[in-house]
Image 1: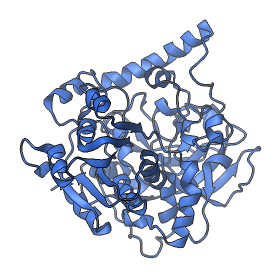
Image 2 (image 1 turned 45 degrees about the horizontal axis):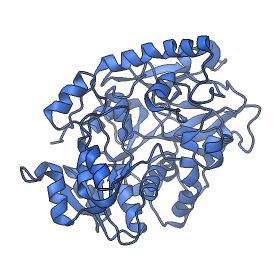
Image 3 (image 1 turned 60 degrees about the vertical axis):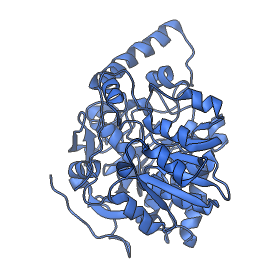
Length: 469
């Protein structure tokens, strides 16, 4: 039997964010107020080409299947228009592989503001180039590529530093400017808070700045390995190295999904002496089988009154050197946070963060990679200040900084992304996939989701499994 994590959302928060966006934009235009960030240099807020056919739909009338968000805990497979080239450096990719991520569940639950009905989901995908815009260089139809989950321009100051996720020129949300400060890069399939770009759980995707945001896949790297350069591999690598895991460190990881699993792998490669993974149910055994040196802590079995922090301090007296957050802030444990989330008084719970702050040594490091959307209450800021805790928001990982380096590791066999690959599934079954993944059923850790354009399964990878709702 699966353990279903409790999440609490307030649909009014999403509705308010969508209502606020045009008001904020109009105010900025009327007052000639300079924005926190540059205006986007590409066409944004085209989250489904079928919703704006004149602007975004293939002129030949070709249709495609895609997965859309239709309210909290509701997704649908629909037929909609194939996208077309809009901006000169756009590329249209024929999708041969996508996947579902734990952060997609935040959208599924409605926890991320500025979702709209009909938005095409999915921020991780690979495929074959279908067409290229007139200003695209270095890419041609028929080439195999993987997309970065973020959309970078390649020329702003952040992109020049390799910090592609912080691109100044591809986001468009005024709500994000108001809530979070100067906005970050746009992302595929992740609400209008991140630019309103159609995602990769579809048969075709428009990729802005395609010659920046697509990486060619060599023949010796099958889709089942190359796909995960889109997010999981760079995100976990960034979490470990941005937070700072060094030789001899003890590390605790909250959440043993794909990101947490690979954080353990990268942490040991960085020289960690001990890594402790915190989760519950079958994911603990799955991680242990693939990372034998990993120590486990089942948070559902800790002794009453001791909690995760007390148990960790018994395992590592004085506290761990590094704590890595690979879970997210939408899963409350106590009644107070459940109530505050339900009432819209906070967007995220601080419970995991407080466990981490209290579990690291003095001057320890806490890295946050799990998604947090806005504000939280009851955070133990006193412990951070008094004990000198380094609280590090890892941000959305800058994929472009790492993906060539990690691709080389895949080619040499230094790492094998398929250690997290449990299922090959079909886009046709995507609504059922979301239900089962959300409920942690069928042992799904990381699937490969095929389309009608996919290649046959690579040697040693799972055969197709079909799910029906």
